Length: 310
Ligand code: UDP
Ligand code: MG
Image (tube, rainbow, N blue to C red; front, side, top):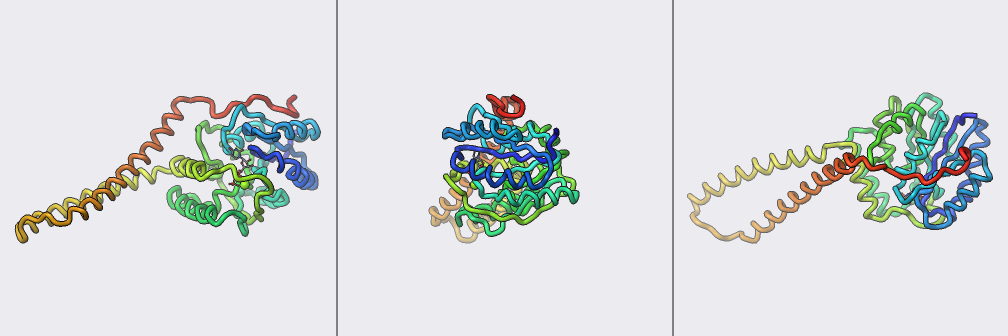
């Protein structure tokens, strides 16, 4: 029987969370009374996650487990699950119980109302102050740069209609950010508030470095505004420097030769040097991504799929 609902879960070293997740997720889906499937992607876990997942695939006919060859990241794990999914509605949810499975019916109801992408806004978000502030800034900058109206980019408890998932599956980009990608295909996006909990067990899989990388994916993957800003800044700086040169020339005639202000000059110079290096870095981000794309290496490697298809 083709499932109506596909729930996709990326898993990276979540051995302690998987059982509790399943104990809450499964009854919620059963109560909805429609055929469903749960697709876990084991993103190269080095703990017992895969073993536990394989056990579940044997125990529940609705469970499928995609075993990755290594760690390819949360978004690749979800994309692989999207390719496997068959449901009319596809849900993404984290494995660490930060997104309560009990909110899924709310998302499904919203899709059934006619929204093809349903995002969620975390109420009373349970993350560190640093993460919340960082997210707030990223959400704001992203909204400005991409022109997309998404309140909470980071929340991965989301629902997508089959049409949108099919379009996502057609994209072959090697680095991506699923909520933003989906938003570009959404004809009628919706949003609902959802509860948010602290991570049940284990630690966040995102170090500061990985978070920064992820946000570069988001900025450069969906907008060229950073490049345009630098072009604009270049024009403004040139205009300003022409004005300044004229000012200095006139001053030279009035005041005569001066050598003071050498250190001020250094400060100004370093400032502009910083901006220049930053600009080169931004260009590099785009060039690097273009390089990644043209190499056309596989985005992820699936070793095996357990359950259902076996
Ligand atoms: N995850 C993954 N691969 C990774 C990093 C994370 O599959 O390389 C999964 C992780 O197991 C979890 C979800 O993505 O189910 C969100 O990760 P995490 O909770 O660490 O992120 P945070 O909530 O701190 O943003
Ligand atoms: Mg989490």
